[in-house]
Amino acid sequence: MKIRSSLALLAAVSVLLVGCSSTDDSANKFEEGCVAFPTGKQLDSAKISDNFGKEPKIEIAKGTKVDSSQSRVIVQGKGEKVRPKDTAVVDISLYNATTNEVAFMAQYDGQGSNSLQVDKSTQVESLIAAVGCHTVGSRVAVLSTPKDLFGDAGNEQLKIGKDDSVLLIADIISVEKDRQLKGDYKDAPKVEFPAGGGAPKVTLPDTNPPKKLVIEVLEKGDGAEIAETDSPTLQTEGINWNTGKSFQPFDSVIKDNPANRFVPGFTKALVGQTKGSKILAILPPEEGYGAGGNPQAGIKGTDTIVFVIDIAKD
Image (tube, rainbow, N blue to C red; front, side):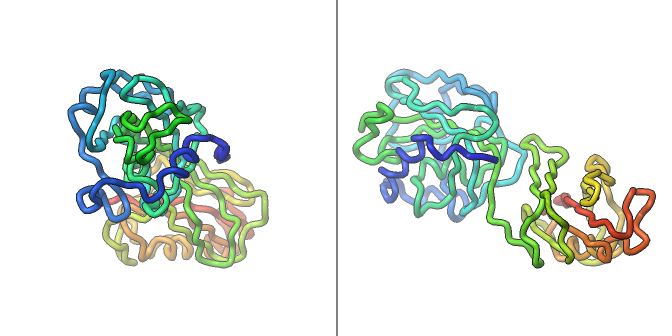
């Protein structure tokens, strides 16, 4: 996904604001490394459309000013959670809540207008509150004091005065993470889970497959750890690397099957993981169906197979 790095919004915010937070951190912890502002009557009374991914429709009382920042989830996404240190792809729009003027409007073309890392050492609290520890597919509104977003001077470029409150609308498109793979292979398939849930989109690289087993935790769940004899509920997308064809549809559910009863590489990818996790596993022939392959599934004895494994939370 190509992220536009030339937009002025985050530059305008971050250049002025690192270290300018005015709120009490102990009162605003959502999770460690995130920020939660309480909601309030000014934000509760504002009308904000729930058309995620499209330009929001806003109605907020002209002259609105707040003494402390507020936040409210407009749309609760069903995707993975944006955790501290993750980089989120977002559409962020800003409105001068005091004058009712648009300060910055995202493009809302499905690609995400900004890339924002959830890091309290480099980002201001109002941005962290809008993105950090929320889920992909969410629209979050933050009604910010000017100081929590732009410091004591406001932002002349965006026509926000030092006493003007700011309404920030963030649509969280996806999460980018540093990929840490087990094995000696780094050119892994790209896996994208849609914000509304459903089957992942898997894009194979135009390279030869790895010769050894590769396992990547795409998203770590917070459930119990899976033992060899456990029978977790799974949804799995299986793809033949050599043909590019799917042989295991994601819409089928696997359950009542002990973790140690799968092909070797699948078992290794599953055992020790936590429920609620999403796993990518790349299996060379010896970790899959072996020299005999699986003719019924169109898999030869020389084919490498790819599994995306979604482990249910319970």
